[in-house]
Image 1 (cartoon, rainbow, N blue to C red):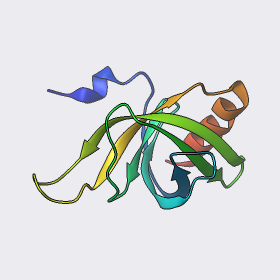
Image 2: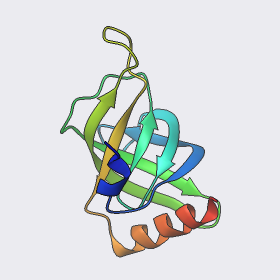
Image 3: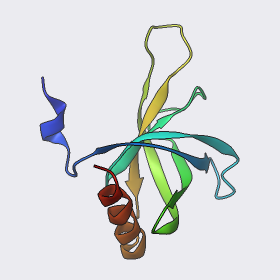
Length: 110
């Protein structure tokens, strides 16, 4: 089954780090490997639960700091019993300013 058809927003492959955490202070720092206006894939070995809310701070080269909240949709593991390799995050409550900045980041990647 091809899940790309189910996406509301096209995703781009990216390679940058973001601050994130369970509160607005964003105490963790991990890599974002794909991004869209609707969400991202956060490459992290930390345990996250589906439905859990997190905060993210992204910095685009031209757009500057973007503060976001997201909901964990899934956690990816390569094999059962192994540490996770990351989590799919859906952005929630995105302001029009943050959406504009996200669009600029997405457009910066081929």
